[in-house]
Image (tube, rainbow, N blue to C red; front, top):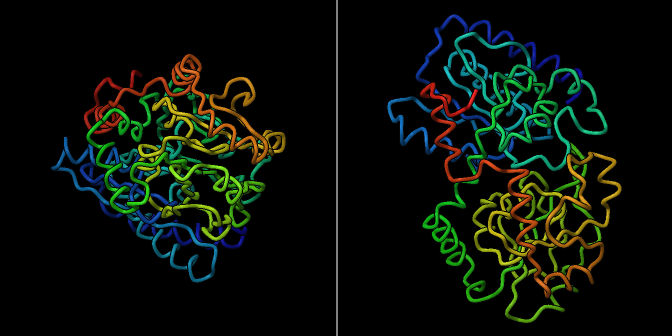
Length: 380
């Protein structure tokens, strides 16, 4: 976003805020908003389901408005944010899972509670205003302001999230990551597996190797990593193995080479569903590592650019000594790691306890207790 774009957008949104403030705050309206994807997924989907189950009397609003870098997309996005600002000024509870411009242009009303429920699990790569390379202006000034609370997976992630999201640590609440509740619901996991097998019947009875890298860069400069030779890997694996590509939902699907894969997953498909089906996960710096750890299955980390990634955006842990899985730097290493399928159970348990300790299937319930029922679940 340029300075001029921010000035125009923020001015318009402040005018909308002023007009919307004529109306009273509706304490029973709950808004879930995201600028990442056009569907409710991950943490937002889980708390939405939990809130509706326990409090069907509330009024729930979904604002699903992905940002676009084209002129037409930006104008459409801005128009939708006008609606977002109206709800921000008149709803009792406003929940987001990423940056959301109406929140950041100025303080919200006293009767509204704004909660940041970040879409990723754990603290792996530096993000928000805490990246090694500072954000460019105007984002450096306005981004991630005015949250009342930030919800995090466990006690050890409070400080990183507070720094990344400009929130005092006493308002960073370790309630657990709602999206991890999925891994404690055996029927839900089996249903997810069956959905994918029905969609991709060629995966039935095979060892599923899920390749799910994250992106490099920021904003319009997001790009895929380099050096991963899926054609060679596919040729080296036996026929009873299936190589599946799941690209990041915020990365242009065409940015990642597709040759060599048995299946190309829909970018917007739910990552947890694929983790439930996967026998081996091949990734790099994706936060899906934290969720996948709960399954205690083989993990391959393709990180030929580790030194560069440590420099920018930076990491919250020592990747070489604290990370689980098998780290490799070339295609031969990937092939060998898939064949060996090593799992160090002791290391996995320590990793889970350290980074996502509040994973017991109850994170969504704790969120509802804290923000809709005023209960003690937050522990503070």
